[in-house]
Image (cartoon, rainbow, N blue to C red; front, side):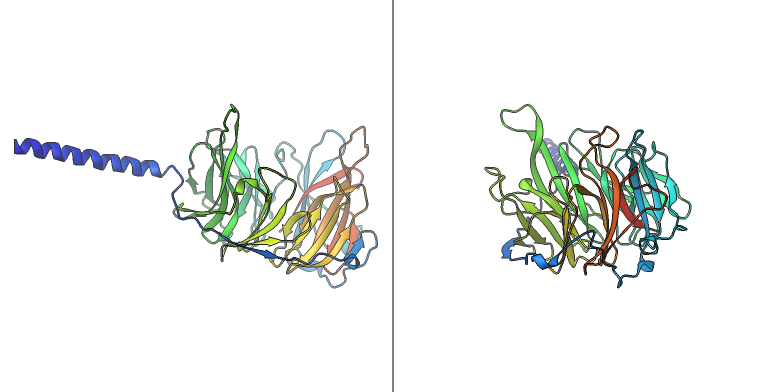
Length: 418
């Protein structure tokens, strides 16, 4: 009788241990429960630009203090304004901006429009030795010395953007996982092609914002589901996390309010600050947007008194641009350093910014415009290009791309590279 009771007790313990192990295994497939980090809120007055900072593009002044020989090569993707709309990828030396020499040439990288079929992209490592290109086939490594694209990954559909780590060895991005409204995070070694997949639950789509440090990324988890009295899957929740890429551990960064009613998230290049805009009265009203800055080191949020505009960090993280691309209003750029406006650039009405690229030293920018309205070859689409180089001290000059007629091409993407 005693032996029978011992056997029963042993079976019960064995069953409980098995159940605990099963739960532990399932826990690997869901978001880990972590302690939320709640930022402190404060308000900061940001200096607004004054009228005497403003200059109009066209009143050219030479940016004489700038040395173009220290810049990398300029890569750009262009689209023709007439059918068939086959994109081409070119590169040239930025020295032509001042030289204006007829001997300068533009080198064709690729005119394979089927290969360049997806949204234009070319993500360079910080040393500009190699780049990643993504199309419908997968992830490709671009070698600027040979102009070759070698496939690195093709298992799942890849979502842009892609981010290099500080060692210029690994890249990280989001991939589909076969379930609707879902995705996983994928870490890939660009040399060995070894990959590591971080799985997320069904109806959870990660959106990577960038690297915070050598082993930590910042990402949103967007949750989809059915709202009450609705049969349509919609975005119902958004949470901000840091993730350690060595073990996949997530730590939630909570917010007073919610991340669902935020937009325009921009992680600084040094990974220390996240800029975003929010609707203070959402979901009851979306009339007012507010600029915010989250300090990821102190977990504090500053409410910024900042004008409207697309926010773009300078590479040194010490300043930013506020940009109106000009498709709805006259295009303009306000250049800030340490939250103080240094220069404002106004563009002629009817021109819109199709691509803007800040120099690696944060002192200048290449701006490409296109005609924002009007008819060209029976089309109402923007057409043609104008190219400018501007500096934070107000210097400016225009230039042409060698071999490309300014009426026949539109610049849709730019990047610095080798």
